[in-house]
Length: 159
Image (tube, rainbow, N blue to C red; front, side, top):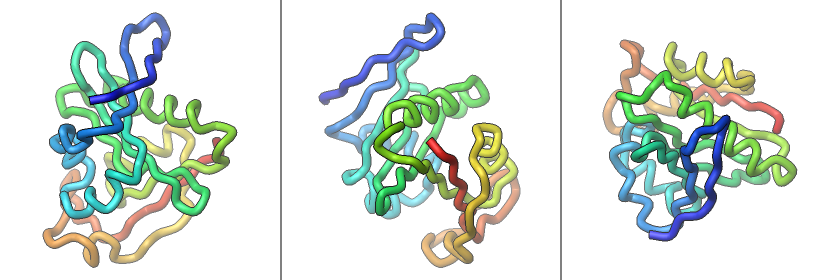
């Protein structure tokens, strides 16, 4: 597996690496953020994938170009490492890497009390809603934090 891109943040020795081959090796993490493998198949190969390694893989992120807008299609942190800053660090990495090539970073998520506030703390603003996205595109209901996800909330920030 080829990977590239080493970063060091605030004296840490964590690495964020680009995965160019065998992306499905990280399917367990991918499925944390998107519960339908068929949906993941729609973007995984055309997207750029990054994994965060801090004495083992802790998180992953997939971004795509959507008509000149950089979009986070999938970002997940292993459950035992959530709320430790790994998701934030991945987003900061993406912003830094793509600044100058893109002006907007977008993320689409369900209207969940877990994910929307995460993005808002990182400076994302609600841009628009795709009605019934989860109901229309997923075979099974998606439940997060006790909330059945129906609409997709699209958030954006300038980079």
